[in-house]
Image 1 (cartoon, rainbow, N blue to C red):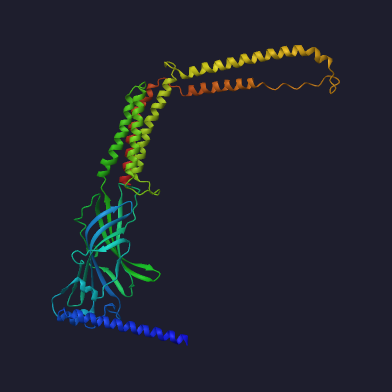
Image 2: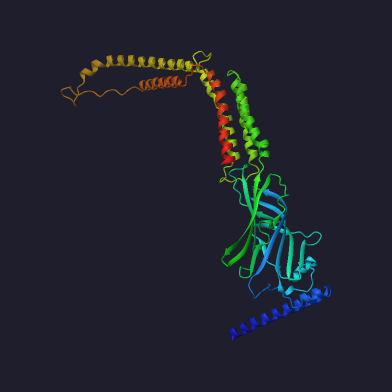
Length: 455
C-alpha cells in the first residue's frame, strides 16, 4: 500500500512540474509577444529553450572565436593571469529559420528565451560578466537560423609556470573552453578560423612580457561522466630582462667590484678593510632579500636570479675571508712587529720550566724520605717472600710528567701548523687576489649567461 502511494506521489509531482513549466513558457511568450515584432513572435512560438537544436539529429556544432582586449596582471606568486576577452559563439538552430535577407539584432536580455551552449572556462579562479551600463551581451539571429552570441568577460585563469630560468624565462599559458553538461554526442566545439580565431594579441602591450607566439587546438576532456568537447588557446610569454638587469644584476655586480677595492688598501688599515668587507656583505644580503619578495616561496624552484646572487655573495664573502687570511699570515711573518706565535712560545717555555722545577723538588723530597725509612725497612720481615727475591711493583707515573709531555707535544704541533701557514711575503696574497678574483668572476659570468640564455 505504501509503495503504491509513493509511486502515485511521484507521478503527481512530475505532472505538476510539467504543467508549471508549460504555464511559465506560455506566459513568457505572451509577455514578450506584447513587445516583440511579428517575426520574432513567429520564431518564439512553440520554442523550448530547454531543448538543444537538432535534439534527435546528432550533435550541434558551436564555433568559437576570441578577441583579447587586455591582459591586466600576470602573477608569479599566485601563478595566474587576469584577462578581459570578447567570447563569440556561433551555432545553427533550425527552429529559428525565418524568411528574409537581413539578420536580427536583439537586446541581450532576450538571450534568456533562447538555448545557449553551457560553455565555461576550465582553469578559471574567478570570472565575471560586465554589466555597465547593461549586461555586455550580444544576440544576433540570421535568416538561416545561425545564432551569434557574444560576451565580454574578465577572468583570472591559473597558469602553471616554470621559474627555473627566471628572469630569462618563457611561460606558456592556456585558456581552455569546455562544455559543462553536454558531451560530444550532444555538442561539438570548433575554432571558426583556426589560429586566426584569436585576435588582439598583436597590439597588446604588457609591462614585463611580450607575446612571442600563440596558436589554437581542439581536443576532448575525459571525465568519469563522459567525453566533453574542449578548445584550447595557447600563448607564449617572454619576460623582458632589461628591468632585472638594471634592478638586480648591475647593483650586485657593482657590489662585487666594490669588495675588490680592499685588495688595494694596506693590510695595516684594519678598520678600512673590515668596514668594506662587512658593508658589502650586508648590502648584498639586503639585495637578495628584496629580489625574493615578488616570487613564490617554493623550495622546488632554484631560479636563475638566485644562482647569480649566490655567486655574487660568494665573491664578496671570499674577499672578506681573503683579508683575514692575509692579515693572519702577516702577523706570523718573522719580520712582523708583533709576533703572536713567539709570545705563545715564551709562555709555553715558562710553563714547561715551572713544571720541571716542581718535578725536581718533588724528586728530592722523595729521596730524603726514602733515606730516613731505609734502616727501619731492614728490621721488618716480609712473610710473603721468604727468599726476598719477589720484585716490588713499579711506582705509577707522576701526573706532572704526563702534563709536561702533553705540553711539549702541543708546542711541536703548533710550530708545525705555523710553518705550514707561513708565507714568505704575505703582501703577495693581495697581488694574486687582484688578478684571480676579477678573472674568476668574468669566467663564471660567461658560463652563467651562456647557459641561461642559449641552453
